Length: 354
Ligand code: NAD
Ligand code: GLY
Image 1 (cartoon, rainbow, N blue to C red):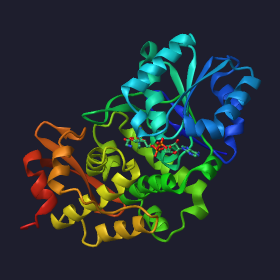
Image 2 (image 1 turned 180 degrees about the vertical axis):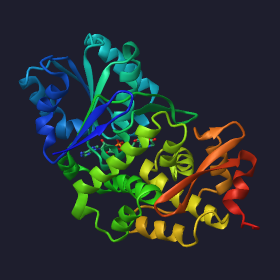
Image 3 (image 1 turned 135 degrees about the horizontal axis):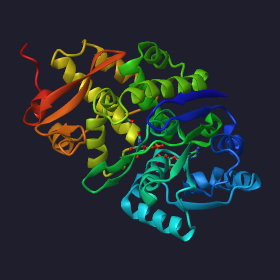
Image 4 (image 1 turned 90 degrees about the vertical axis):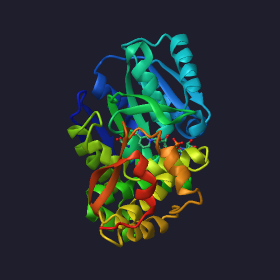
């Protein structure tokens, strides 16, 4: 088992290791001592079929009172209606401030349950048990929680760090390939913005052979960033590489395109534009495209760039009349590049006159 300590305002441990789900009661006991808080497990219907009953049985056997809420899988559930249903469930089960919520599932479950935990009774503890590659390396770490509203993705949320993360790569055995690829987009992102050797490992197709090490490396990279900028005011925004247009594509496709697919296309789009603007070495976008391609990720879209720029105006990275784009200075190093919103379309389409 590998342990990564995250020193945010509320510090916590991330435990990584194959088979760790079975050790959840012991890991929770390490975090909470002799106390046996009531555990409110939140999961989706797919994850529930594989791991829901198994986890609740383990926890009950260890003496924890457990209740479980299951909602339909998919991004379409990541909204305030589902959060209201969770509040109803927490109320019915008498969940108090000394109890703990447990998010068992992918990024949708983690973001939604985390937001419910951040807001129920003005915050209760929550534990993340991520079961997708994406949620292991990204969404379960760093405390961003939230839901989508019709105006855009993740527009309502809160920063609320988990009290423990239990990351068991063996749960990925049941994850369909398309969702595994989603996580690869975020992993390639870490390499592109922070670690050129990690990027080369992906380029060389060595991800599967070093899966647990890659998960731990990605988590550690995110830890480094989040510890320096927990509230997303500077450095952390680099983690949004590919996300401005990724979110715009997801929204335009009414979430029929997954988050990872959107991010994959977004990284290629922005890198082409920043190459044209002379900010990124030429050939970078093609390297990213080839890398993503070998993992079956899409790298282009038929949506007109004008439409995507309009969608991007609602992005969280916008502040006043500027939108902060994340561009690569080279593979392994990123920077924020503010662009006037009325210049966004020309930035994305025009050749540099420099
Ligand atoms: P997801 O949670 O929708 O999971 C994908 C699918 O896989 C779902 O149908 C789920 O039921 C199924 N599944 C999950 N684990 C499984 C398993 N082990 N076996 C079989 N099926 C399984 O999607 P995701 O890619 O994990 O997360 C995407 C979400 O994460 C988006 O909403 C995105 O905005 C969010 N996100 C948040 C952050 C953050 O920092 N909070 C970062 C990146 C992404
Ligand atoms: N996934 C972006 C962040 O956590 O900041």
